[in-house]
Image (cartoon, rainbow, N blue to C red; front, side):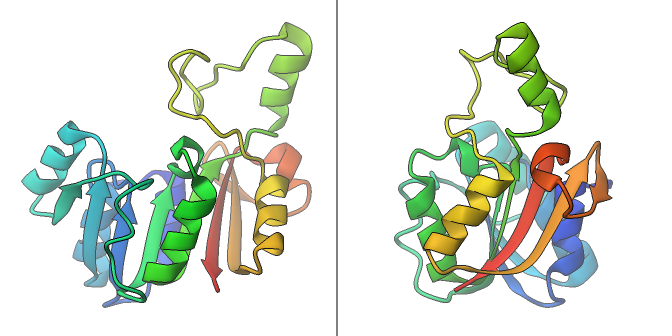
Length: 195
């Protein structure tokens, strides 16, 4: 099974045998890869009922829940890693969700689309319309993305909250790129965080 590029980065950096909570786990692709290749005890929380069913059909412990409201019930430090992949920008209160991730996980992976990528900027500048790209395929009125975060916004947010960055990876067309100019040139970002 081939993982989405941001999920592959996360999978490569999760320690063997770790306990993981994948928040917004989709159909459980990352959880299955971690279970099968890294002997990880992975749990999932997913809003979409069809994705919950797909995860459960794979033999994964996935429950239906909402990142905005259902993380408070998890005990402090109950996981080695809490993962929020391509979900931060869909949360109603991403600041509170990040606080919860760092409370229940000793470390947190967060990945998101970079809304400052040059194609997004160009679409707004020349067309005057919200961009529709292969990575952001929805129209403005049906997108789940309610917070348009950029790499530089996220870094400033982490700095104000005294969150340490243990690792950061940037992707363009699924390929890793350097940190240089990432806010303009990277389509996606993946961060490994800790308090």
